[in-house]
Image (cartoon, rainbow, N blue to C red; front, side, top):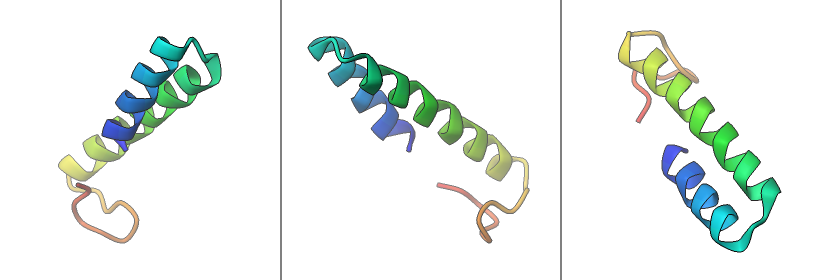
Length: 51
């Protein structure tokens, strides 16, 4: 999810498409939150670890 967010950020920046930029930021934030929750031991989506 984080990688997809970064890809959308780059495409949005190069093509000057604001909606891709916004979606990229949202995906990066959600990915980081899930990653942190998985790293501290909380179950995310029924899994003990989130990759």
